[in-house]
Amino acid sequence: MRNLIIMVSIFLGSLLWAQEKAKSIFDIARSGTVSEVKELMKQNPDIINQINEGGFSPLILACYRGNVEVAEFLIDHVKDVNYKSKEGTALAGLSVKYNKKLVEDLLKKNADPNIADATGSTPLFWAVKFGNKELIELLLKYKADKSIKDSMGMTPFEYALQTHKEEIINILKK
Image (cartoon, rainbow, N blue to C red):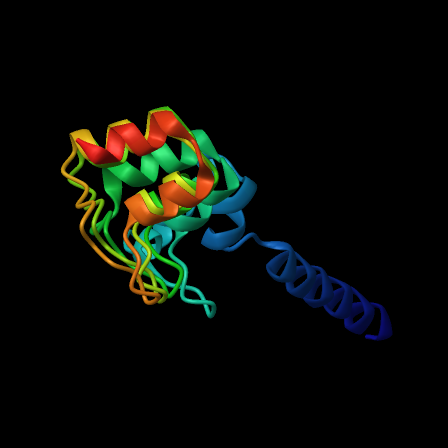
């Protein structure tokens, strides 16, 4: 009987340990694989649309962390590529941690380049602040509104003037 109790205790302990070690969709979005996402989706197909305690979606996390394969999968399968956390959308995350392919994929899936974060900054603001000429041109091609003002009352053009980068200033003058 004592051996049985020990065996059951070990078995239950290992089950609890295995559950604690299981990755969440948010862990997988940051650094996992598409096959791990698909496994979780077998149990709950809507898991890719959940929001974590910080207000972030798996798509935002995958884009920001540069988990390209998972981000591409999520772009094709989430309900809303325009979900907005207080820090913005997945497109805003890519304006900080730039990946041209992911930006293009999002924009082709109708990601809105004019959704602002809690400070009123759109992806175009971040592209200007980081001096990313290629991203600025791409966002403008997809109808980024350069007349939007942030919470400081400034436009992307006004930030461009502060950078003293003539190419960016000229792109935004057009």
